[in-house]
Image (cartoon, rainbow, N blue to C red):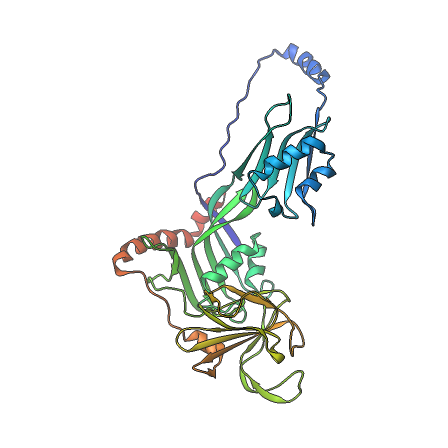
Length: 418
């Protein structure tokens, strides 16, 4: 697994510093150092930091640090003018600059990876008064190329990217890009190889997240797929192959992102693990951890959202062109009957309800009222709309720029990594 920084994007972190310099003779330097060492300024405050506990309030957080009375009341009220106090989340970091007499000079709370709330004391004199604001967290953005292999040691996309020091966010993003072409539950093979060009964000030198994937290449079972991000004028960003054909299919390859394996395939006769006799298995079983998200493979209308006996908690969705999908044995359902949903929208979570021996998802597909093999049917889905002819020149220019970075010669890539 190799990762290369190709070029910096616009730096979001801007700082300035100033320094003063003194010139002293060699004879005086020891005296200066001795006098400087004798100077000791007593701290007048505590600098407190921590994580918001579970099942608590911002008022309770201040109580823990002995911030009470009018001081606490005014501070909580000031924070409430900028931020809904009910949205304080457990596990988020905070910092309090508190003087020994209990007065607060500054309070910071990290809302999410991108924003933080800051409350600053207006004056040390008189009644407490605070100025509050929500600020963007400074980050630096670079474009990097990451590549890796699927093999015995890294037999999944997340494992391959984890080996490179990347987060699962990037694995999920790459799986989304190729979701119409690769079923990451069952299609990965030893020897598969990928490269991805992505905006990578750092904060104080540490990985903070990702911007969009700009381009990617994936060799899967000897077949090379390429993806280029392109935004038509006045339209939304989408991914296309190197000929400008859409990578989006009418159906996603799988209702799960990746990782789980197929434990039972479509069959006209299969011995049921609980009932003990043979009957048709009208779908595909995916082994997955309890609570894993299950998404709709295509836009449609929810026709069933409830209990269906052997299927346990079940969601069924009617799609255009005579298709209907089924998601069985869910632990939770997140849609209601009659709702219109989009491709990739969450419908529920993997469970073990109904006739199930363990947590898994049974995914079924009907075409014109008859069950069909989902894996085969998904492979035959036509692609979406290509890049409009009027924009093909703009697409080609963008494609060539991304591809030159994605497949830069080894020497150039090595130089960029230094």
